[in-house]
Image 1: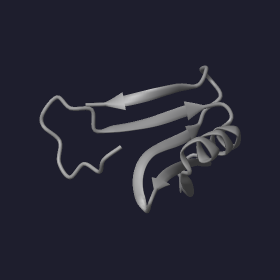
Image 2 (image 1 turned 120 degrees about the vertical axis):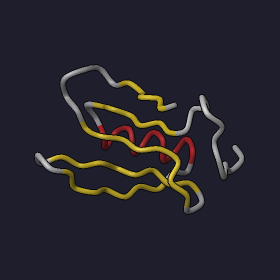
Image 3 (image 1 turned 90 degrees about the horizontal axis):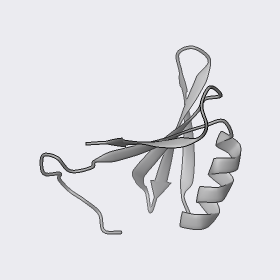
Image 4 (image 1 turned 60 degrees about the vertical axis):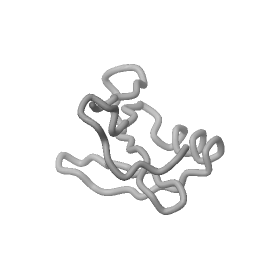
Length: 75
């Protein structure tokens, strides 16, 4: 996938994964795409994980146990 420098209005611009198994998702997407991960603490005793490819942030994920795993898409 090419690197985007800008986004036209109405273009998908970000994704993050809400998952009950963040460690499993890191292993899966790390193996699949070669992503590297950086965990940042968030208020309320949580962790927001940034996913990087070739040094660039490409997605994020957060541990959440209420719903099945799903991707959130941002326009």
